[in-house]
Length: 117
Image (cartoon, rainbow, N blue to C red; front, side, top):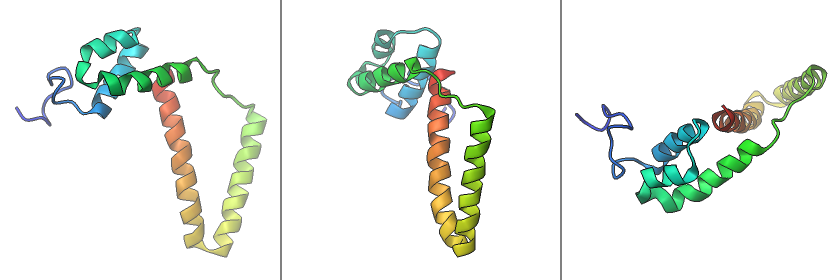
């Protein structure tokens, strides 16, 4: 069996990358595990994991951002108008601006969803 076929449960601590271990620990924390339990499970990564897991727990304790449907619609309208204006100036230029902004927003949403769900 090669590494691609192994699941995280079958891999040893030595075979896992920090990103894989972090993902597993975030899942464990959502399931009720403590930071100490995660560190004990992956002692090789403990020094790197501790600050990341502590930040994740702090973020999880923050109130979830919300906006009214009216505010969301207004923000969406402003964004679309801005993109339309940029599109008139240069389609290539608007893509260069929109893609990083959307990627950053999508990244934040993904992190927030990963930590809070």
